[in-house]
Length: 383
Length: 214
Image (cartoon, rainbow over all chains, first blue to last red; front, side, top):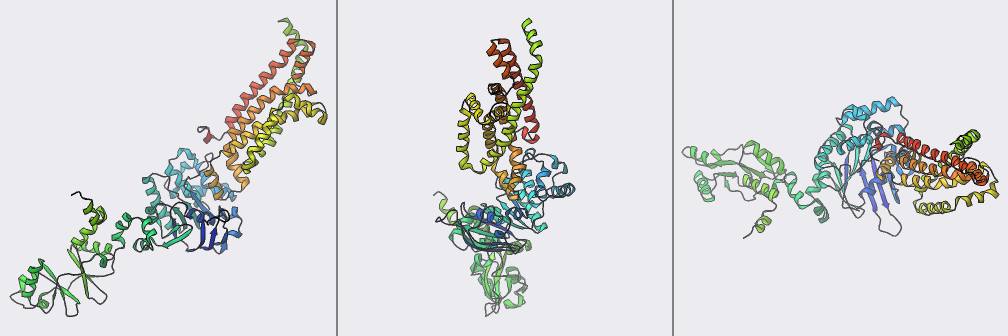
């Protein structure tokens, strides 16, 4: 759909390039968010797509055609564009603003009216708004119109330059949601520039993090949170966010207790009860000689069976529920809480017992997420 | 009282034709001014580096005394209405040019960027965004120029251009103050009337959505 090939932009010769030898491929229907500190080249990169800024070197291919070879005016009519300052034309009605590209393309009056009515329904604004003027609308409504204006000629590609940056947080939130939904329904490819990481994580299929005119990391939000490629990425994402995202991206292996209290299946019930007493627990994980998980046994089972049976494997419950080491904590937590279990055992691929996640482990996690790292909290507490 | 009635009865017809001439000279000059200065003003916004220098140059032209300009055009264009119109046109250029330049330059750059990003050509940007938005300022320049020109047009008589100035000059030559008054009052009324009409026109032409803002 969109491809950058060795794209470089220099503003003036000799100076450090604003965008340096950028290579990137974007698939159709992707929501791609460019993010980075000011001056990292994200906006320049975006504006080179519709030639508001011309490339110095390299080529940008949109739908198989190099944009640098096309007439910029015609090119821009085929690409949607939304800016932070909205830029509705004040002396035109909302309707005229929405179908601005249509009038540039010399659509008939009927076609323009029909299209404007279709579009305004998408953002749940009443049809009579079409006859109002931009200044009669709230900021959020104005930007909804700004987005519709970009959609008017049904372009497959839409460029958005911090479109929700100037809105208040609540309006921004609802517009983000509305727009994400709209994008999915219409299957548009979106290039979205922002400096707000929350926004990027919320909207993006793919985040392109830039610094100094180069791409530092381009990946899905999950991947970026799970594996920040270097310290810059980590810093940019921010520690808070990395912590908060832990349930989303952490695997059970990272937080499990690797030394659960176990008992061999060949042991006697007497040995089992001794171990429980020693370790102050009410249940044990049962393993075989090869450390494979076989089931579990708890105090009730021992109590009601010790007259009839001698060995652990005769009374243990083999319906033990276990999760793989690499399952996401998010899913595991959910399952534990739903089943009302107080713990879940963790196994590797060949069902060897690897560890255990208990409700206490989860409590630690939640504590860290809400109040920061346990260590820091302890230090911060006055003596 | 009698003298005024006398003068009206003897100069009544002349007063009408002179007023007609006067209007013709002023409006022709203004029209020329608009035709030249509005596009020039827009052009200047495209070359902002040169614009300030060019505007000061036109400003210097403006400071040349009007009598001198008229005298200066006489050897080139001869006498009569045409040189008068051209001389007055020179004066109309600066206010219109300056207001057009300022008005267009002050158009919100975000709106221009949005327009450009939507795929507006240069001409479309001028027609659909810049001119309508700058119109109140441009109109103010035209109104200003017109009012001044109506006053200065009395000097056209000096090079045989006609107009109400003829009455004033006759009054001076014949030492008849009534004639001077007869030439001056209609010129003043004409200026005030034009100012009033152009103010209305200015309001009419301002896009309704921009009226509250300005």
